[in-house]
Length: 324
Image (cartoon, rainbow, N blue to C red; front, side, top):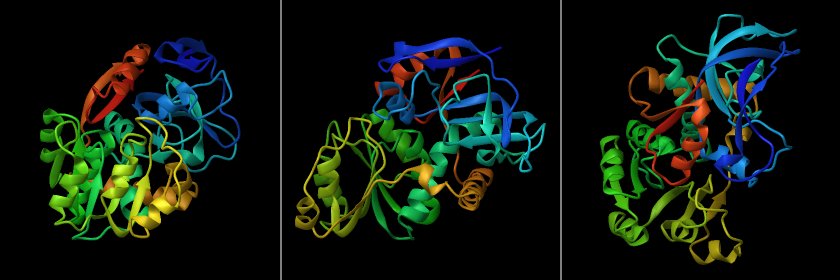
């Protein structure tokens, strides 16, 4: 038996239970991974609350890193003893040990430790596809990135600087503003003391930005549209403040024939070749030191309820991990 988090109903942090589970041997195409570190992400909250629906009872968590302990029939990509990491389904990374589809596992370079890997896979791969595939950014572009001091945000600030992109970031405090600035954010806006739409217009000389990356959702959506230059792209990739409200397509036309997309990592990484290429790109910038993964919070797996409380109250900065 091993320990894992299970939910038997949707709700607040208290619905997460620390229970004994029997993992069993890996099936065909699977590998059993003993986890050394587990990623904590806001998408976990969506599954816990039921905003994203899954059959119950269920596990939570989409990201982890550890060592392969056994492989099932037909597995060739990983072997026993490999150091591996992953991001994406199926849910269930909140566990000491689990069976995973081997096709989702990536062998870690020696230079990247388990804690770093668990903190960077989902967030780093997200920034990779946002910057290189959803919109292929180039040097000189000016973009707006909400929640710039969060885990995704700090990676985005650094990666934008590597690309020569002028990133304007929003944050909720002066402490977070200093953190984003220290990680390469070109301009920082504290949305609690400044109107972010007005400031973006000032910074951009009235032109607006070519892309807005918005993981906040309800609270920022229409303001984000107002920050875009004509023909700009709105990338809505999260709902931290709640779902984006229904809107008319005329809202896009009236603001200058805007584009909008709602991407997900699962789609961009669905093909193994794409996943490997994205991981190679991420491992490259992290391994070179151009992008540093800032783990600001560590929690024991048994203390996951407090981890979710802190995450939802926006007390966290950088990345957070659970330790099994």
